[in-house]
Image 1 (spheres, rainbow, N blue to C red):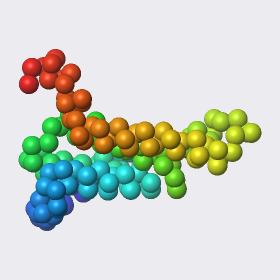
Image 2 (cartoon, rainbow, N blue to C red; image 1 turned 180 degrees about the vertical axis):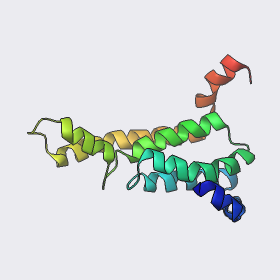
Image 3 (cartoon, helix red, strand yellow; image 1 turned 90 degrees about the horizontal axis):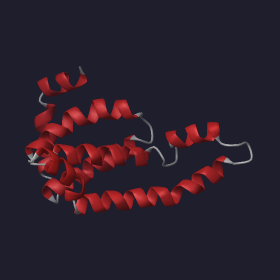
Amino acid sequence: VFSLVFRMLGGDELVANFLGNLPGGTLGAIIFILFLMFLLGFILDTFEIIFIILPITAPILLMMDVDPIWLGVMVAVNLQTSFLTPPFGFALFYLRGVAPSHVTTRQIYEGVIPFVFIQLLALGVLIAFPEIVTWLPNKLYGS
């Protein structure tokens, strides 16, 4: 409902103009949206982010010739990484619930730092080489 009202009021044109005028063109728009989703992952759950951000931004990115499979993988990895990141780190709270009592919350937060950096590096690699994501679907479905 939010997306429909947003579009009826012309919000999609406003967002399209904003994203189109970002420095870096399509890549700048993608990085901005991924960064926004990463920040929202600190305070919102997956479904809220997907239901609010994607209906607004995905059509615009698709019009900018972004591959939808690649975009879906980037969003999924980005959100999963943001859920491992303090200050809230929802996935860290789940881990705290199943970790033995001698493992402190601080140890969990410190232990996830290398993994977050590896995932951010992987996002950078996927931005630089999108064919890593799209190769198999293209091979299977012949696009």
